[in-house]
Amino acid sequence: MREMRRFSGFGTSIAVALLSGCSFSSDGSQGPRPGFQVVDGSAVYLGPVGPGVAAPTITRYVDADSSTFRSVNGPGEGKAPFYEHLEYGKDSEKVFIAFSAFVYQLESCDAATFTVISADGKYAKDKDRVFYCGLPLKGSDAKSFRLLDPPYAVDAKQAYAGNRVLLNANPKALEVVKPGGTSPPLTPESGRLVPSDSTAAPTQMWGWARDGQYYYNGSLRIDGAEYGAFKILNTLYGKDSSSVFYVGSEGGSVTGETIVRRVDGADAMSFQVTGPNSGEDIHGQYERGRRKR
Image 1 (cartoon, rainbow, N blue to C red):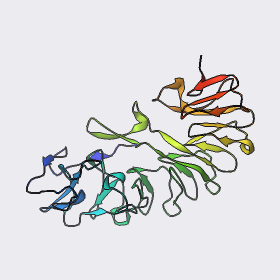
Image 2: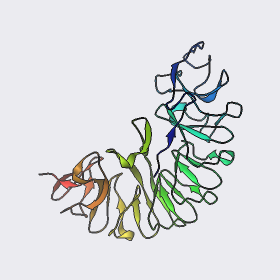
Image 3: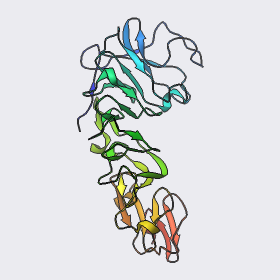
């Protein structure tokens, strides 16, 4: 997966400047609003804002045509706080996303047909394909693409969890049993935006779905589970008539690659969860899918 490029109108890096000549009230009623816009003839992104930060404090200058540049509103625009959805801007030829207070250009994106399709701004598309947080969604079909409860979506050919394809899942039958979400699949690193799965902190996903043959937790299939008897216990645990399954990182670490594993020695009949990562049965207590000693 290719990284997105970082742009500026001032050489190879984005210029950062304190806002000057603008004043802000606590409700943002004075001065420019946050987000992508044209200020004094330049295409810019004003931010960041968040809980307790009512007004933009920096300007990111964008390498765009200011005469055609504008923000791209999505379904969540005006319905949620600004900081709860991703922001996009575009000119007649290029599309940009703001992430972690920096601005990046989407690769091979058709600006004329680009639209944001999810309330949180994570999903967007052009005439040819779908993007998740600005990254192309591999093999996606924009015409048939349809959102389900997060983090899931389907098109005519595939099913998706966030930025990942659910391998061999049936997109026509997929249903979300327990909605969830994902951590951002992008990480700023040395002035670049790289996929989180290539770093030490890979993308985390949660939520349960099923397609008539398998259950899925995030993007992971629960292989070996008895479909008709399977019960979801919480975000991380599920069980059938004979086994308990845990979805987490190998070795119980809070970071690292997430896998699905059977809980060794657990009694499915008596097993119940006692917390987000913990459970108990007639044999004892369990933490992160392992028996406590």
